[in-house]
Image (cartoon, rainbow, N blue to C red; front, side):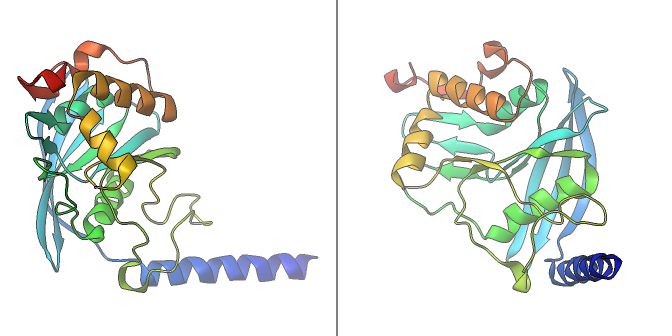
Length: 232
């Protein structure tokens, strides 16, 4: 029996080593703290990839406990009549206890399209920044926005728990809040995120899924802007 245990430990160690060798190497620059209010600090960072650079905003609630966390693929949605400020949405969730990183850029939804879906490495590396800089609760993670899924960066063949550290080796996400795509469910979710009642419905869904504190509807009052009747 001891011999079998030793072999199993060796296999796990080799798996962790291969994971580290194959893990896509994310690059970041310009990390800085830019403000703090309502128990939430805001930071900025730039993600650097071969395909370009994308800035991001990180919102971190004051807490000594492991944090639930969300990766947002964009920071705004521009609809035909209304706009949705995802930074304001994420700030409301931060007040309920969730950290978020939001990639700069808007989902242009004047007419439904998939044009805003950016290369998957940016979502992956946004999650990597969270792993490298925050103490995360691995059981309360989420992706929000549009993403194709199934991406294997640079031959990556492992994405899960590192058995030596007990931490995730890369961003696995968790629950998905899809919007900004023309597939039926995601398209409907996008339309809902452009309406105040839809924003509140989504916020409460995330609150339940990530086991956050109860939300105050006033925290989300400024997410949607516009004068369309569709916003009512």
